[in-house]
Length: 370
Image (cartoon, rainbow, N blue to C red):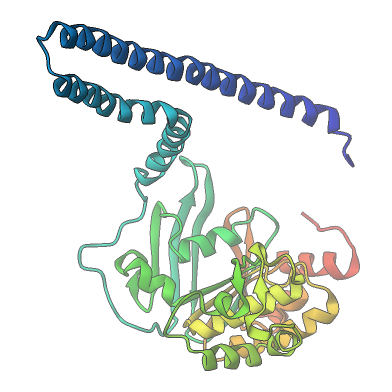
C-alpha cells in the first residue's frame, strides 16, 4: 500500500488464483467421472454374476455356494480399486509434492568431503587467504586476489561498501561455496582438507538476522546438542548478559519461542544467538553485521557480551558502523572485491586513504573523494 502496488499485486494474485481454481476443477471433474464409472462397472459385474448364477441355480447346473463364492470374489477384486479411486485427490497431491521432494533429494552438493579428511579436534585459529579469486557465476568476480593473514586470538574487522565482498569472505571461510583460485588455510591446512562438519563446528557464526526455531529458550541455545548441559546453557547466557531478560520471562529458560522468535525483541534475539555460540564454544567467531539493527541502549549490552565472546578466540567482524570495530587488532578494507588497506584504526586514519574517507563520511557527513 505504501508503494501503491495494490492493483498490480491483486492482478498477480488473481491470475495465480484462477490457475489454481482451473487445476482444482479439472481434478474434481476427473474424480466425479472416475469414481461413478468404477461403481457402475462394479454394479454391472455384480448384476451379471447374480443374473447368470441365479439362472443356473434354477436350472440345477450350479450350486448356490459356488455362485455366492463368485459374488464374494467380485467384491474382493473391486474393493482395492474403489479405495484407490476414493483416494485419487490425495494421490494427485502426493505426486505433486513427491516430485519436488525428489528433485531436492537428487540435487548434488557442490562441496564434498575428501576420502581421508584431516581431523584435528579444536582449531588454534590461524587464518590465511592467499590470492583468492571467487565468483558466484562464471567469471563475474566478487573477490579478486584477496590475501591477508589473521593470527590466533586476533580480532579482525572487514570494512567496505555494500558489495565489496565482506560476506563472501565469510561464506568461503565456512565453505558455503567453492572458490575458483588461490588458497585458504586454517592452522596451516587447506580449508578443503578438513571434514565439513568439523570445520563448521569450530566456526561460530552470528548473523544480523537471527533465526530462532519453534521450541523454548533452552532448545534454541543448545540446538538439541545433548553434550550441552542445562548448567552450560545458564553459564553461557549469564556471560553474554542474556540471563537477565530470560529470568524475567514467565517460563524462564522453558519459555516457548515461536518461529523466528517473533515474540522477542531484536536485541533479545541477538543476545540469545550470542549465548548459543558461546555454549558451542567455537575457536573462530564470525560476527556478520551483528549489531546493525540494534538500538543504542541494547548495543551497550551487546558490546559487553561481545567482549566476553571474543576472549581467547579468533574473531572476524563484518560491520558498517565503524564505531563497533575501532578496537580491532586489524582492519581489512575491501573495495570492489580487492583488499585495499590493512592496519589498525589509528594506522588507517593516518594513511588518509579509503578507510579515512569512510570514517569521515560516517562521522562528519562529508562526501568521499572517490
